[in-house]
Image 1 (cartoon, rainbow over the protein chains, first blue to last red):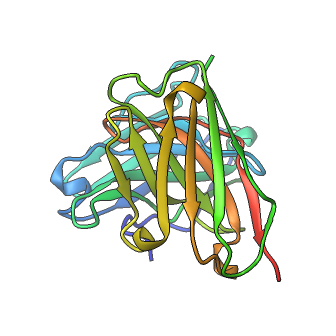
Image 2 (tube, rainbow over the protein chains, first blue to last red):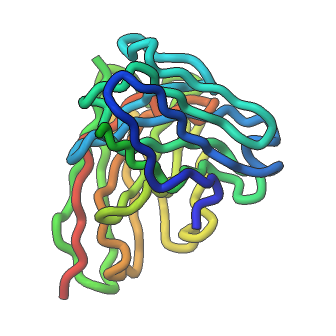
Amino acid sequence: QSVLTQPPSVSGAPGQRVTISCTGSSSNIGAGYDVHWYQQLPGTAPKLLIYGNSIRPSGVPDRFSGSKSGTSASLAISGLQTEDEADYYCQSHDSSLSGWVFGGGTKLTVL
Amino acid sequence: QVTLKESGPVLVKPTETLTLTCTVSGFSLSNARMGVSWIRQPPGKALEWLAHIFSNDEKSYSTSLKSRLTISKDTSKSQVVLTMTNMDPVDTATYYCARIDSSGCHGYWGQGTLVTLSS
């Protein structure tokens, strides 16, 4: 069981908007630690998608956005494209575990 | 540009010690507030952070694996080494190294190396 909880899967049609939640606790997200998001395309290494809760690295389309509130964070993807089909992971720090923690990952299917 | 590359054995026998090397380029292991993490991913499963080492030699380990892990770096060779003792079939995974900053952001990743346990 991951310390950060994500839905196992989400889906949407091309052009639609989907959100992926990342639920933590008072020892990680709720403690104020930054949340980062990664996209893992099939058969490839993860790639940084969002850092510092809501900042997009250079080259990441503005269709991707991140937010954080309380003990949770969310990744929103608007204008879905078929190439967005991938696994998405959130990550933060946990003070109880004294280390970095990842969510269980969410598989996005573009119908 | 920043690159990281993992190297090590493809096959490991149960109870053996795994040694993985991450060779970096495009940045120095002495860069302030930067470091390298090791992260693994069993087939079809989620990412799991294992350990990190920062430029000031600060090290941290996954609580559940701490007794089996050792991380070190050779700045002159631009290499970070992870050893994991007493390997078990459940340790079969793709092992990644990634550059980490002080906020925990893993901005650059290696391609990963698949390590399989087989007797």
